[in-house]
Each structure stands twice: as structure tokens, then as C-alpha cells.
Length: 124
Ligand SMILES: [Fe+2]
Image: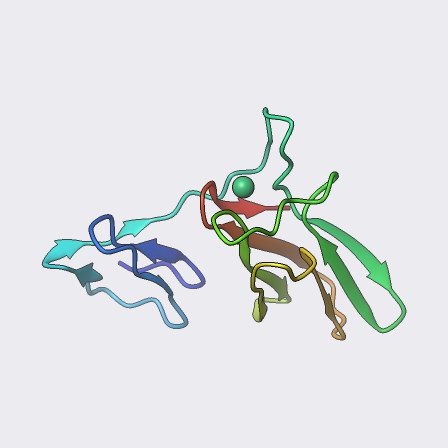
């Protein structure tokens, strides 16, 4: 059973997909089951990945992280996602962008996730 808004990764080729509708079928890629990515929530190293969500007028600003994450060709934040009341909003980033995103949406239940190309998936 695929989990709604779950990120699944192929451990062979590196494809990552996000599930919009969770159904009973198993997600496969390269002839193998895809793995549900774990959402990490605590940094132990000096490099900070946990996204910080700040309420701003009319929306939210998300920054990665408490010290800004590097944005270099070989190591960067690939996307930042804000989930508001079970709706997902995504900003894709490139090396040399700032590791932050502004989402002009409001709601009751809010959390953010981001994906580092080296260190995986992180959740606020
Ligand atoms: Fe990283």
C-alpha cells in the first residue's frame, strides 16, 4: 500500500516519486520495490537540514536550516515542500539558489519537508 504524500526512492537508479493517491499496488522501479523514504527530524552533525517554518504575512517562509545548508553543484537542497492542511506545495531549487522558499498559502496544520541530494529527506 503506497502512502499518500510518501516519497519513494529506487535504490538502484535513484528515481524519487511522491504519492498523490495511495492505493494497494506496490511501487516498483528497475524491477524492484521502491523504498519509502524516512523523514529525518533531528540533526546530529554541524550541518543543519531540518527545515524551519516561519509564519509571514499571508503565508510561510521555509529556510534550510538553522545554519544555511550549502548549495553547491555536488551537495544541495533539491526541493522544499510545504504541506498545509494535507495539500502539498513544492519549490524546486538549483545549486547557487538560496536554500529557502516562500509559500503564499495559509492553513491550520502546517509542516515542511526538504530533500538534500546527499543526506536525504528531512521534516520540520
Ligand atoms: Fe546535506
